[in-house]
Length: 88
Image 1 (cartoon, rainbow, N blue to C red):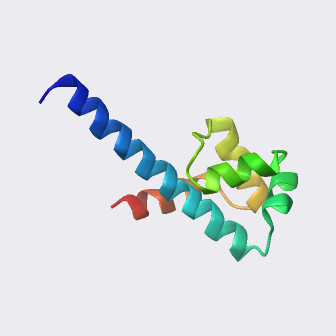
Image 2: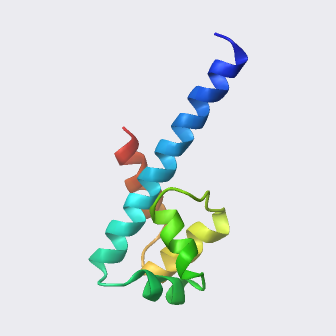
């Protein structure tokens, strides 16, 4: 396999992971009855940033993961675990 093919495969896998994480955040937010703006406020983030995460357009940092979890009132491990389940 050529190096460019491997990079392409890894990039596609990353996009799938970002989409899965976004779906988990969205489902958790809706389960809490929060708007994107409400979650953003609780997490100390910008609403547009939350929207981009939910759409899989952003690569959240570890700090963002913890901020989102705090804003949702759940453990960061729950977000990671649910994302992992979606990826399987």
